Image (cartoon, rainbow, N blue to C red):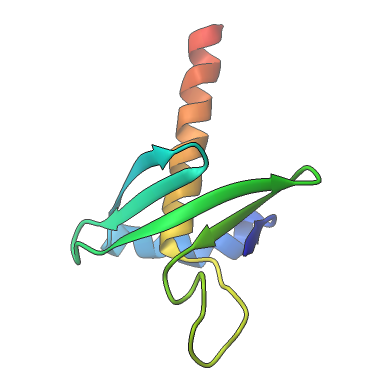
Length: 97
């Protein structure tokens, strides 16, 4: 599980989106499917909130390590979802004013 906190931590993950754009679509509440448009790989990314903090879980190797390292890292799939959700929130905010 990856905690969303310092935006600078996500800069590297977001930088990778320039080379490999992602498509985000909601599968069910709190669960999104993020597809790499170049490699055509799809990963599920889940958003959860606990004690006022936001956490993400991604099915990719960086987000849910299976080999070697055991600590999840911010990945481009989670970064794409964060950017997507912030854009939706901003559009809704503007529409309500």
